Amino acid sequence: MTNPKEIIRAKVNLETAQMAWRDMQRYFASGVALFVSPDLDLVETAFQMSEDNAALIAQWMAAGQFGKVTDEQAQLWWDADAALWAVVVSPWVLVQPIEN
Image (cartoon, rainbow, N blue to C red; front, top):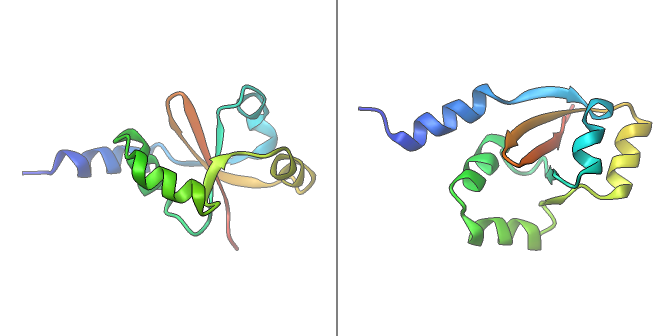
């Protein structure tokens, strides 16, 4: 029997896509774009958000690995015409820079 948490992780993984930062401006402007450090696994981060794991999320925020996209990040990504990994955990849109 499949673990329900593994089903949720698989669903999040299927909903993850690469997107141009320029196509995500409305999410940034409305304050729902959240930065996920390349040090973190995007799918696991989205899963932990869906599970409302506040302690772990607070730990990531304190370490600067997770939080609202800053104006500076947004401008850098805009100038670079960056593509990012993205996934929705309603109402949030999690974005993660693509590492080369």
